[in-house]
Length: 323
Image (cartoon, rainbow, N blue to C red; front, side, top):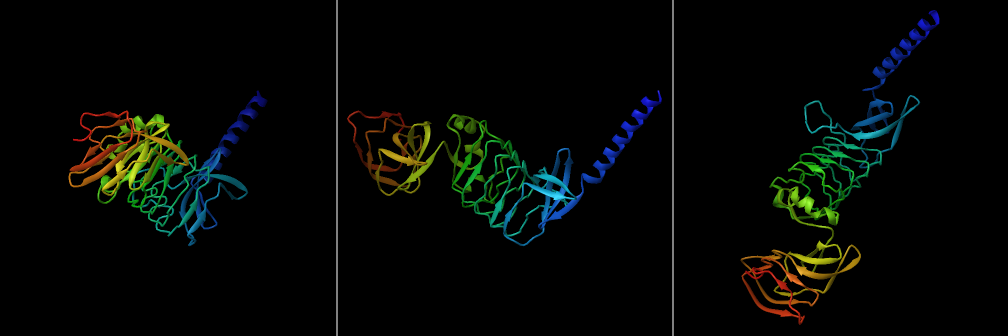
């Protein structure tokens, strides 16, 4: 009986010591190399970046940091919330960053993590699952890839990115996304971005409203622009469709094949609404024999003077292709 009581007391003491240790560590903050961290867990030991206190504009965030002989994994940059309040600190807000390396241990890009900097590119690691409000807003990204593990993109996460022509999203099915994620001060349709996704996920992204609601003019599994005409992988993963006119001159010669991502694809279709304008005219359009179909309102223009078909076998024509 005494031995059992002694064992019970020992177990109680161990629990109390564990709780005391927990209370002393979780929430504690410490600084390493100009970055202040907060301990968020002790089993396993993890930390969140609270604020960057340095002045360097090129920053490499470590995978792990040490404090008092213990190693912690860096798993979050800022708070895992979309709700801003007065006491909340945005970790790298207005730090003039031109380059940042995010380790493959980070799962949370928190509220305002890199808000208002000078980033032109960023490599978001595969470990990231959540990008919160204002995560990368107010930067100058020229390209963006959202990795497959990202489950959620918060309000205005990429607000005001004016120079970004192509966004790549690798997730299938699409991540949950706030309708203002890619917004601008003038609204989501102020910019003309293309979205590149896995081919089998194109319809899922369209059904989720990425084209209608978020400012993307096309959803393809690959896109390129040749002589001010845009081509994409839309109808087939092995063939290109002419999808948009981005300022073609009066004379249009459609190539029989185009290069997308380093691979050559035959141009087999002219998509719905490819040339939509009530103001302009096309003097000459030359369509190669590789084109097998022409979609609805593909040439919805004021006037076309000459159409030259290079094939003896005419393409399938939508009834309203030239309306």
